[in-house]
Image (cartoon, rainbow, N blue to C red; front, side, top):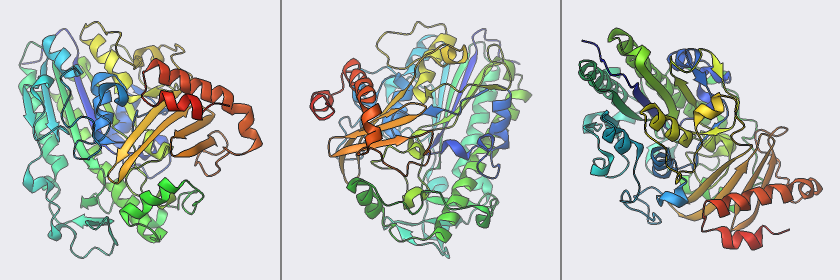
Length: 459
């Protein structure tokens, strides 16, 4: 029996810590994402998509609310001492609750990021977390790895000695297909949110995905040896204990990172096949994105931290909507992953409130001049509070920190952010306009850093 809902179904698939350029369609690495590429060919690909913040909980909260972290209050992962909110704030309504009230059957699969189960406010009817045997990276999972140990916890990379059917990604994919089968026999629409935990560090991957990419084919990042950087970046490298690790190990780390992405892509392919088999594909909006990016050896850095680099803030974003998006659409506009919030409510026939900060992806797809820049923020990581504010235009990037004078990069000429121009004569030409933009954004969004920024960013 086919799902007979008149409103479109919604399937949101979110990876954890995936670089924008890891998609095969981006053309940088060996193609490990044939299924996500197909999804893009059938819908829209956004090569200039950015996260709002490079940390899991705040970024996901922004996707769910359409608001910046300093507005919804989740400014750090809830397990950190600097987290302003340890649980989901009662004042913030995620889109999942709005869709549930609109009659959607709602489901969530994966790590909820706010305790062991999602808060009741999320209104999920179905929640399936990853279970112990799929997530336990014990010593047997990396015995024999030649990689150096990092962060005093795991090797930089390792082969997980389990069958591919025993991995978390496979388990969550199985659960997603089961949810789709159950939903196919119902008259109401569904919203399914699948949160894969990869390719986030640690890079411990099962075969055949671990060996899919030849590390000898991976060239060093152009900025791999760059060390002219603020002190906070050096502390980040020291925190993870990755100082002095050579490219031969980082190439293997990138190999395993891409292998984890290939494993997710395999799951995406199985889910898309299930949509076809169940007759759901034509009436289901499918979205693939990530909460934030990942360094994977750029500048010799691991994971994420207090840097404003594109490696952390640019994310993959693909959307298929047969009734509204022409196949093969490539939207070059600057967008952010929390721009998903308005179209998800619009799809459900719900009015979008004026309290959100995001702009609709549909407007960008329609060619409207939605924004000429994106704004990102960072608040804290495990070792300290390190607030950053980031302004990114097609040509320029300004990184403001209360702890140093900041960074300025010409992204058109220096896409790997190797030459900080903040103290050059060229900066004098562009800084006034960029500072004005940043201050206007901070004032518009009631940023608590505004008062200090007005003095420190003054000409």
